[in-house]
Image (tube, rainbow, N blue to C red; front, side):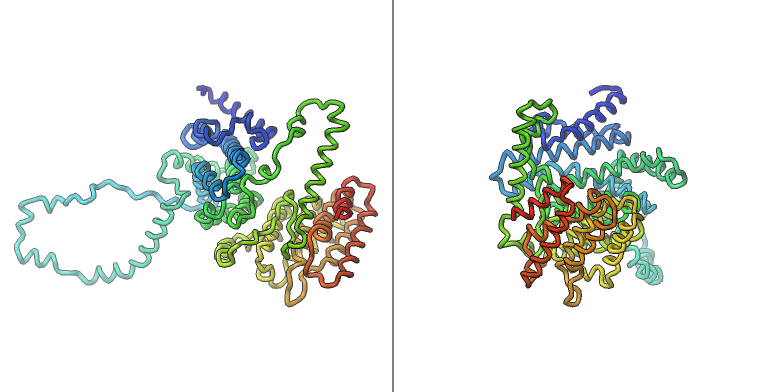
Length: 535
C-alpha cells in the first residue's frame, strides 16, 4: 500500500484495464484466483478498500474497485467449478455465496443510497439509546417522594380516559410507521448504522442536488459512475448464485431497481433479468465464462502466431469448435421442450424442466411491477440498449411459461414492436440494427403463444417481416442477417411440435433457405446455411 492517493487511483485504473483485456475467468493463474486463498488475495483487498477505507468516498476509485472485485469473484467461482467438476450444484452455490455475501451486502447499501436520492426520501435513522434500559427513575429512588399519602397515590393511579382515547386513534398510524421503520432498519441495504455510509450518502446527496439543476456532464459522470459500476457488478454476481441465495433478496432488490430505472434504465433492467435467471436457475454458476473455458488457441492470441498456427492449427481449432457447438445444438431434438432452447451465446434461455410451478407463480408476482414499468418504458424511449433489455426480459418470462397475453392483453406492445420494423425498413430508426436481433428473437418466442386459440405471431408472419428487411435496401449485414439467425435456429435446430402439418414446416424451411441463398455472398450466411444443412 502507498500513501499517495494518486498512486492508488492509477493502480486501480490499471488493474481494471487489465481485467477488461485479460479477464480472471480466462486467466485464473495470472490473477491467482484460488478459492482457498481468496481471503488474503486481491479480491478480499478490493472488498476491504471499497467498504472501510478513504477510497470509499473517492467515487472514481470506488467504481474501479467494484468492477475489479466483481470480476475477481467471477474468476474465483469459475476456477472452483473447473477444479471440482464432481461437486454438486447446491454445494457450489453455497460456497459461492460465502464468498460473495460481503460484496453483495455492500452493493445493496449503495443501491439503497441511490434509491433514497432518486425518490427524495429521508433515510431511517437508527433509534438512539441515550438512557440506561431498566434503570429506575429519580422519583422512584427518592425516599421522600416514596412517602406519598394514600389519597395522592390513589389519585395518581386513577386512569384518564381522554388521553387513552386519543392514543387509541393515533395507535394504528404510529404502529404502521414503526413497523415500516423497523422493516427498513432490518433490510440488507440499511446504511444509516455506519458513519462511513452516512458520509457517502451526504456527499452523493450534494452531487445529486447539483445534478438536478445543471447540464454539466462531469457532475452526471460523478453521480452515475458508482451506480453504473454497482449495477454492472451486481449483474455479474447474480450469475454466480441460485434460488436459495437470491430469493431472500428479491423483493428488496426489485424495490431498489424499480426506483433506479429513471437514473440508469438499461443497467437496472439488466439486473432485473439477471435476478430472474438466478431465481429460476436459468443462469449457470459462472455465467458465459463458465460455459466457454479457455483454450490454448485463446491464450496464444496475444502472441504473434506462427505460420503453422495461422494456416493449419488455428482454422482447424475454429472448425472443430463450430462443429462441436452445432452438435450440441442438435442433440436431443426428439426430447426437446415446447419452447426453443437456444445456444449458450444467446441471452435468453429456457427454464429448467424441473421448475416447481407453485414456486414459479409466487416468485413471478414479485417481478410484476418491474415488468409493467419496463413495458411502458419501451414505448417512450428510443434508446436501443433499454429496448434490448426489455425484450430479453420478456423473452425470459415467456420461456418461463408466463402467459404473455396477461402482460399484453390488448396486443398493444406487440403492435408497437411490429410498427418499429416498418420504421426500420423506411430508414427512420438510426440505431435500429442494435435492436433487430432482440426483436426477432422475441417474435420467434411469441410464435408459441396463443391468444384466444390463435397464435400471437405466426412463423410465416415473422419470415414475411424478415423478407421486408431484405427488400428494404438496408444493409443486410446490419439488419437482415441478425434477423435471420433466430428463425434459422428455431426452424432447423429446435423442433416445433405446434406445427401439425409437416408439409407446412417444410415449406417454411424452403422459403428460409431461398432467402439465405439470395444473401450467400455475405460470409455470415455460411454459418446459418451450415446449421440448416447439417441438420
